[in-house]
Amino acid sequence: MRVAMLTYSTRARGGVAHALKLSERLRRDGVEIKLFSLARSDDASAQEGYYRDVSVPFEILTYEWHSDLVTRLEKMIDAYSKKLPRDADIYHSQDCVGGTALARMKAEGLISAPVFRTIHHIDDFAEPSLFEFEKKAVAHADHRFVVSRYWKKVLKESYGFESTITYNGIDIEDFRDVPRTRASAPTILFVGGLEPRKGLEFLMLAMQRIAQEIPDVRLISVAKTGFRGTDDVGWFKVLANRCQVDDKIEFYESVSEEKLKRFYGECDLLVLPSRNEGWGLSLMEAMACGKPVVATKVGGVPELVRHNIEGLLVDPCDVKGLARAIVRLLKDPELRVRLGTSGTQRVQSFSWDRTARVVRREYKRALHSALPKPSMK
Image (cartoon, rainbow, N blue to C red; front, side, top):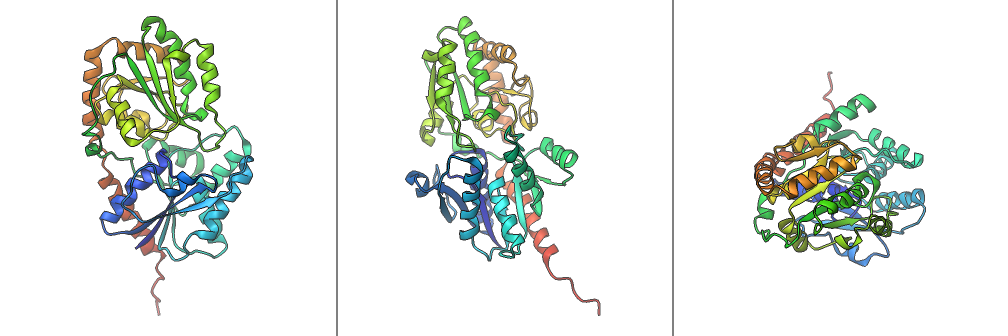
């Protein structure tokens, strides 16, 4: 079984992390798999490899970045269409870019193998053209995976498609060496993206309220631009200045795995104030490090984080509620320990081995269904 796994970036994004871990597990189980990812032609570091070492063969395809979103998408799709192999037994995309490229290749007769798509979430983009692009990419796959029960329900009720759940996993051993030295000041960690979906602005607005009760609080934000590539950290810095908390926030676009683990070890809690979420890999990573979390009740998050057991859940866009939950945790060390301990136990229920078994099973079913039926003569 030869599998081509597609993910649109080499950076530390949720879909990329999922693709790397899943591919490594499948290869360990004997699947012949190769990763294919995209990188801007003017970004030399992205062309060198992924944000971490991987144990799977890979190829990084370059495309010319363009400021116009639709034009940029077409260039990304074109890079896939021209350079992907034509002889894989299975094609599996982690995003709408790869999914669209594979659908076009199949329609043009360039490939005939089953096309799988993992749907981490469906963005209701403000730009109509991008939202239509997203919906069409969902429709064009032959087989669909989702990462939570919530998205399985949405896909069925809103789009009419069946899907198979393949939860994100976690390797606890990846976090056993995380230093547990707590920072000298009360510290909140955000790991996500700058795109509106992640809701970083709500956390920054909450910081104004939090600082009134905990003057020495600080926020570490590890966030890079989103899929559109237009999100600017400068906007968030202006917001921080207007909220008079700019001296309490450290912004990082990208950090090494070692430094990210140090942030996990030093922080008191992780906050993910998303408007829309597939699952929340940063939540899993913080929980694996024994840290409590504050998150919004959106997408698959409540399936991972149970309120007042592994973390505190609040309504999306609720700045007051977000601030109250964070202050509660920062002021109650016993609660932090209780939720953090429960979180470490909780994430051990989600294994990449189990996810890989489900994916491999569905691959085999698709290949069996694609075989020519014997003649009845």
